Amino acid sequence: MTVVDPSTVKIELSRPDATFLHVMAINFSHVVPKEEVEKYGADFGKHPVGTGAYKMAEWTLGQRLVFERNADYWHKGLPYIDKITFEIGQEPIVALLRLQNGEVDVPGDGIPPAKFQEVMADPAQKARVVEGGQLQTGYVTMNTQMAPFDNVKVRQAVNMAINKDRIVKLINNRAVPANQPLPPSMPGYDKAFAGYAFDVDKAKALLGEAGHPDGFETELFVMNTDPNPRIAQAIQQDLAAIGIKAAIQSLAQANVIAAGGEKNGAPMIWSGGMAWIADFPDPSNFYGPILGCGGAVQGGWNWSWYCNKELDEKAAAADSIVDPAKAEERAKLWSDIYAKIMADAPWAPVFNEQRFTMKSPRMGGDDKLYVDPVHIPINYDYVYVNDVQ
Image (tube, rainbow, N blue to C red; front, side):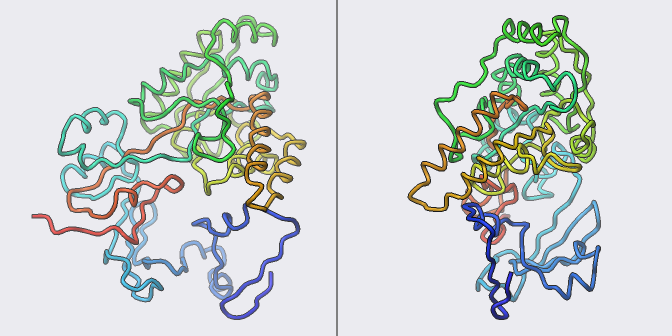
């Protein structure tokens, strides 16, 4: 890195990287003032510095954050809203009730599945529902470093045992069944890929071949926010049908993440509520952090602890193709990588979710501002408040 002048930084890479501009544009990746980092040290994260549309005015840890309009924002005339208050730690059903009572404007976790039918049956509420696609995949990880999931046939059997159609119905059809790590709208997604069909008999046969004709006992970790425990119970029932007795560990999100980041912490994890939503719209983002060797480390997000160095090399080769004219060639390389991953079956992909949220009657702006395919937060630069009596 070289400082060219007070407003320019030059970065030279050790190899070509097609994802670099995406990475530099990630919403949590910024150049920050050296003097501020030195001033606050480990507490720098509690003293944010940025150039965005809002300035932080208040932060009560674990409870609320208040942001006020940044009068020095580079885009003149924006934002439209003077102040935004985020309340943290609200149960999704409580947040929806508060929206219905006119106490809040947007529920951060969207519409709770348990209330979805009720909301959609009310014309007044349905008119304020916003739907959008997400670059998201919900999946079950299997720790490839822990027996019996160190046996590929066991992992393949789990893929065949899960009734994905039933789970999609469980969440009011707000998703489509998944058969590979990439979501359908991501470059590199292989429409011709068949994946593992739901087949209880074949799953049982594979378990027998793996030396577990009578099944085995294990644990399935899950975040304790609805609908995730219900999804985990459905997976538990499916696994029981082939002889796998999975005890559910329903825990707070932080505890599930911590268990996944321990090499021997969690045999299986249902990723719901923590499932991967792309940081940027590129197939490599579904590999490096959650399936590559670099993520299979203490505290990492590769909860299957799957590490295939040959695929790491192929991933690096794919990302070295920076010529836009070769985009199809690069996408094909990524398709081949994910096909190999599915043969090794460190995951059982379950569904690709659609996001549904709501806004209060006074909230204005295009619906696209409220649901982003990559980021859960809405675009607060352009939303506004109407005068509603």
